[in-house]
Length: 409
Ligand code: GDP
Image 1 (cartoon, helix red, strand yellow):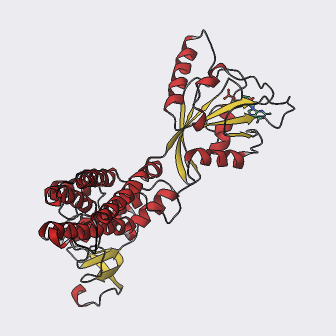
Image 2 (cartoon, protein in one colour):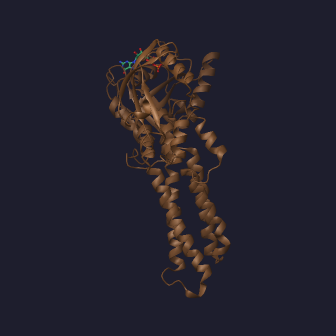
């Protein structure tokens, strides 16, 4: 009888086994025609939670003739049925996998079609220009007074520039997607472990007053300013004879080089600077003067652009520290909710391909090559853009994209 129900109406009923025994009381919701996620007739069954009931309902439905979906099949159908373009379909995955609020914002924007609109805009401009160039070839003597070659060059150049700007957002997109690594360095006992606990807001690292106890690299995840950080607490860097500690120090130095962000922790009571200070890349370092709750002498001048004063013990100054961290991470300020970001490497590579082809096209035109010999470059650019939203895309690529989706999406 489900077929006779009006679309988008909920109905109460029972799911029964082969012999008529009740499995569960359920609600079913038919969504017919195009008005469903995947653009095909869909029936959703709402049963009671719990893995046993759900499994039994599922088994019964399969027994009655349904087939389990492949990973990403619903979204794939939505794509095939034109409910979503490819970039939007991929955004579904990013939405589900988002590890922080900013990544979620970016995925939502992409799902709404912000990236697709941009890409379609580029395609439109290029198609228009291709038509003009073609006319130029066909009627060279008419002079095409309405548009000069200079203007064509300018318009092509500006599309190329816009594509380049979009490619540049990938740096930010990657930060949202993958997170950043943060490394704490400083002499033993300055309060690195305490600071990390304060940042993580839980007792993660072992805090001890015996110098050199943080021998191992501790790893933890921290969410800060809407981003994910992998926090590396390092063994206190100092010269030592002890074997284990020496290894720890070696690893600290390495972590320091690899980190996206370094917190150099100093003790206000003992303001001498550690010897490795000059090894630190200043732009990605925040100097943290710790133990501000204690009496202390005047601090020496330090030529670092980012610094703040805190007490890890009392957890004061944490807001200032977080602000400094944000300044280091977002060199041009955090991305606004309105900004379209490229977060997907596939999209970035397609944009780069288009940009390169446009570069060659522009070079050729500037050198006076007749546009007819540059048709390939134009086509390459258009095709590369098409790959992002899924026009003319090969089956293998589609397969590889949707196979990474989770089942049921
Ligand atoms: P680490 O060796 O750099 O990791 O330093 P710890 O975090 O283990 O701290 C060393 C000692 O300094 C411990 O006894 C902490 O309680 C103490 N300490 C850390 N931060 C502060 C602070 O802000 N104020 C005060 N008064 N003591 C602190």
